[in-house]
Image (cartoon, rainbow, N blue to C red; front, side, top):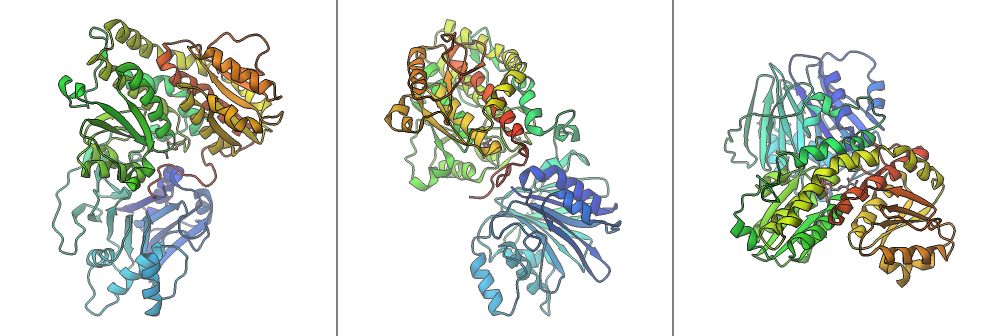
Length: 611
Ligand code: F6R
């Protein structure tokens, strides 16, 4: 959420900064800006709107070889030129970009205003720029590093910041508390970003700052230390990221959502690779450092995640209960820490996060660790805050997910949880025969997902038929329930069509009142033990003139439904994974038909690093 780029080196900074922002635009896209030093001052160019609008404002070559830049997702103050970052102090000496939220900004703003400071924006960030600027204007002025430290000691909240001093433009000062910051190490040049996506074009050598750390970054060196006013040095060595610029390119696709939907067969194959063991009919999950005896001692499993990761957790809970016969449930991570949760010693807690940065999920993991809970992470981004907080778990191996709407990460999360369920089942009562059945089913998934994707045009035609609908129900039973929730979520976020998910069994307890010929229902109908119940629900909807779109692998009576989205057969336990795919395509094509900006849905951004 929000993107930061910084550069200090030997080349003109502006093109590097703008290109970096372009790579980070999925994290925020309501305004963008940059600052570089120039003779006698700072050159600041910023605008409401997309990075392309910023690019259009740069009319001439800017020679400065140092600068900072930002793409914003508004928290304090509407998207506007004035609220766009960078923000300056009153003297125009300090420029600062910030991700996160300064929680005591109102108090700081009031104190600074009483001291005569006038503010140019409504943001929480500007107060910090003034605090640093005022410290540096004092007679025995501290260095930028000292001023940043002192100013941050007055700040409550979360931040990843980069600060530039007009009078000492040979370095940047960078600090992190709750919002990611990574340094990119080049040859005679250094990069700073909130996400490696902005760096991999230039270098694979990176250093992740941890919370409570500060770095002074020069073109040929960096120094890291703790953030405390009485700082101690922290020695950090670069690590190599296994990503290249092409991982963040569209290739031949029109947008990242479509690209990532179509990457699912390969992403799934990567998640399964080396993790299925036919001989013992189980899963081998190397990141889970637990002996069979410890796995057996687990009495309950709780999955914690937000949004689509939470729905994947619901799919996982169902899988664990079916395969391992131990109670399992999923809970939105965003609520967890506020209800003073009872943390049980024999419960396995599993934090789910594609980005590994979602603040709510990170806070839930931290609460669990504080209370001594057994914690695993199921995360896509290696080196991310949640991956490091959890210490052990399962990496998704989905590859970078750029689309704001999650697709391949959800599929890989659900599949990873199926493997966890298999592992937990096989140290309990899941038979070898059933274990073999699940292993074989998991192996078939990549090919079957490809089979569903091959029917994309048929799904697109169904989506086009329903594109003028204002509201839809998504319903499913048991295994189909999280599929319905995820389907509704996908449709809402990229098409802005209202979609509400219900347990199919709950429809008659109230929402059926809304069914008429303007309210279609998408129903998840696996050919399982609940088929006749789902057919009953379809009949009830049809009797009230509601249109029905069935996602199904069953042979439904002719003429029963208005449209079918077909899914191949696999083991019923694994149905949720396959049934999710046509609903991704459905949401995608309905949104495309409505002309929506699919990779930049309104009001949203990737990686929610604020509360
Ligand atoms: C929906 C979507 C979000 C995320 C949620 C959690 O398509 O992408 O609901 O799933 O914000 O994000 P992660 O998984 O990064 O923690």
